[in-house]
Image: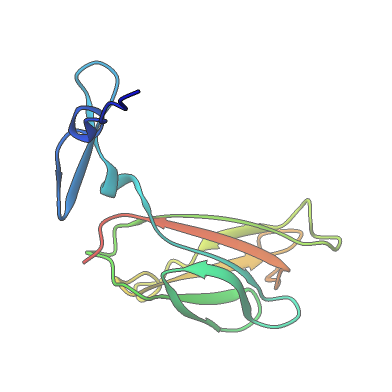
Length: 140
């Protein structure tokens, strides 16, 4: 039997070297590149500051207890990118750990971001076994 060919443009929409648009429900379209995760990392700061796995992350550095800087392989277009973090600990802080993006002016640039992690209350900095960060936004 003859196999029919699949019309990719009919399923995907417009494609070019730098743009893929996906047809959504109804007449809506979505820019695929805009919605992709640009960088992610799983890292440990409890036993050592080390990357377990990552994508588009050049390195991390330990800024002291509970403070980690994540350096990107590819710069973002601006410092208004979206970042999400989740973390946990196998010790007593598992259910009470917290994280927040560092808030001083140099904490979030096109090439890096910083996170503070802590234990039982917001005033206690703590290094945790598992930290996960995802970055979305436009690359430079």
